[in-house]
Length: 228
Image 1 (tube, helix red, strand yellow):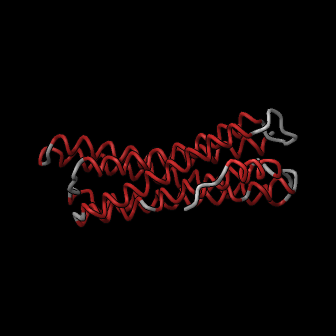
Image 2: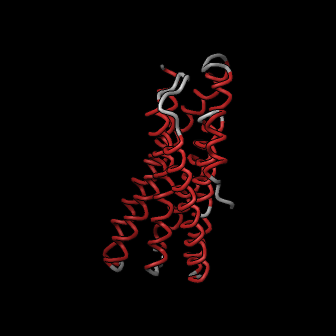
């Protein structure tokens, strides 16, 4: 995936400050899309593929960092928009934390060979599915920002994005339930597992939870935009 130049981003900013945020979110979502493939490689014990996928996530996270930095450097000090500059900076910061969490998952699998405990595999699959759903919903919300701007943050577009926000919040609540069940199951079998591996599995579960938390934060940011 080509890295966007400063000149290109500067041009986007003169048109709409949302376009570089959307471009950043697309890269972030690309990071998340590699996570199920990464877990599948771990399940199969394919260490070569684990290394390859972890490196791809790392490269995408680096690209997301560059887009975020360029956005901050080129963003005007004042915007004639119904959105505060600091809110846009916080929005792209929340997006970036999703990519950071994906990278941390990749690094954990890269630096430590992990075996998936059979007792939590089905719950992990459920958690991964939920993570993908909420991340896709968050991306879809961000893709609607230009349409909101065109109608002046009013009209039917507000109803549309409000339904998306409500959907993300429901998904996050569902993921909280899955995480509670997977932690409970891991706790019940941890005496039969390597203690260090158990610690890393708790970490990986928490990182997946951060992705859903940050997706909900994006929904809260957009709700803030609508309320101003």
